Image (cartoon, rainbow, N blue to C red; front, side):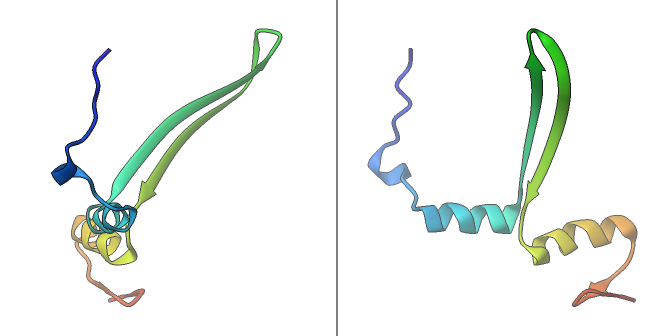
Length: 74
């Protein structure tokens, strides 16, 4: 098994990591199946987008062909 330790210059703080995620955005995808006695009862497909409001507006509005200023569509 490989050791994936980071060198000292590659370490980032939690605050810096959060800043990067909010500026660029991140998508978390997961699946969860709840079963009892080997019988699947519930399936959950999860998609979570983590980003700032400003970044989300920059991504979504050009796709719509609109411009949105402070939550008001023009």
